[in-house]
Image 1 (cartoon, rainbow, N blue to C red):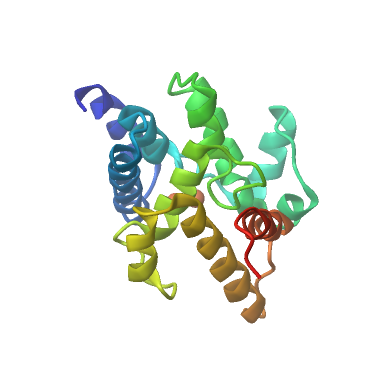
Image 2: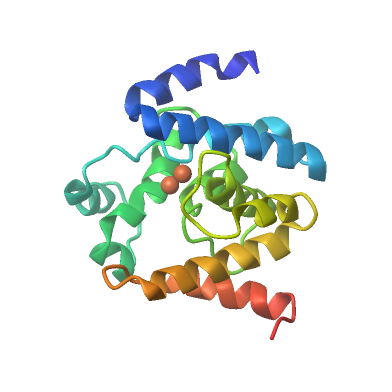
Length: 193
Ligand SMILES: [Fe+2]
Ligand SMILES: [Fe+2]
């Protein structure tokens, strides 16, 4: 993983320590999942390493940045600009870190909400972001960590379901419609009640 040394240093300079530790957790979990499923470990690690690279950007400047750089904004993102850190991360990954692989860029862009029809690497980062070992807040984490290595689609379904349920219980948080669509996509695909 020597080629990632410079990338890692740059990411470290651009996010706080807490986020950097989380980032390494995501990159390493993405790597191990890639090994488990016979995917490209370097692509997975790179997507994990860069997924939150735009996290530090001030929320109040996100909409302006996206408009200026041709990044599409949904109504939900307009209302909750922190959601844009994924798409902005993909922009930086492409322009500042020299990433050209569309699967890596897509995984970075949609790691928070996922979307119906998301590809394998996007599912992988969606899962790793939620389950990496430094995460503690959500329920069922250990069960889901086991499931991640047995069935990625089922695991993504459970994460989307838990996220929707959790957000619905919070009075100060809204469920992003895309998270809800991701949940229904997997529910239908896996024929769950
Ligand atoms: Fe994130
Ligand atoms: Fe993250």
